[in-house]
Amino acid sequence: MQTLRAILRLTRVDSSLLSFLAIFLPLSVRTKDVVLSLSTAIPLLFIGMCTFIANDLDDIEKDRVNHPERPLPAHHLTSTVAVILYFTFLAAALFSTRQYVAPDIAFLYYTLIALSISYGYIVDYVPSFKAPYVASASSIPVLIVATLYPGEMRLYAIAASVFFLTIGREMCMDIKDRSGDAMSFMHRFRPTPLAVVAFSLQAIGVLLLATQTRKLGEVVNLLAMILLLALSGVYWFKLVSYRWAIILMKIPFFVGLYFLL
Image (cartoon, rainbow, N blue to C red; front, side, top):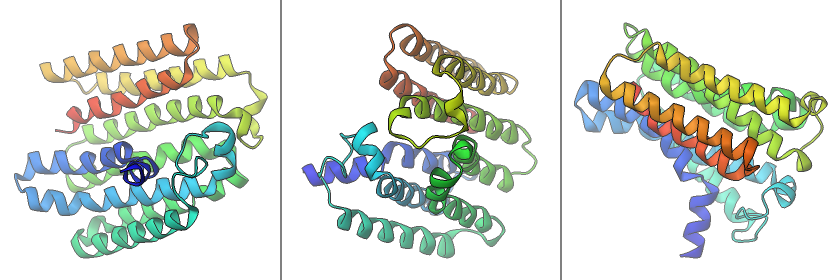
């Protein structure tokens, strides 16, 4: 049981599942075909899992400082097991993309795989570009849906919203992890002004969704996202509880899935 929990933590099942749902939910609503929706979305789950495993393998020394509770630095899993899982999920991602994804959108899946496995080079050699790099990759699932339904222009606004929400959250995570991360251009700026910029970028993401709000359900979800962002700001700036602030920043991504339906 402890090993299973460690694997679930290593693969960040919640974040991996988010990418899966960003494809599965809008397709299942539009096509009413659960099998088609599942087969189109399942590669995203495997891509997310192998991405997070690779990140933890690359960052194991940094995580001894920033995240000692993670499975690898805490010795809940060995690096050998992590590598085996990485190649297993990578193979599953490649096979399922080749087998189930339509050729006209498969390029976006392979692009996401390439971006994911190249993440370590960004962290090591151009760390200042890390936040926009992650934000760009995070927007791809919505761009996949937009490619499938080119007449729905609001999907591109939602993709842009995901970009701004992600880049703001990544900047906050980088501020939290400064002590263990390599020096970058962003270290020239003091944490508080940088956090203000990060929250402002997330606010832009929410405002982009506001321009696409049409139904009562979307209004309710938008208000929930605003409340969560405000609450994370309280935890960050007033309570100085960075961990809980970042956890709260993740929830709006799940709430925002409603806009894809």
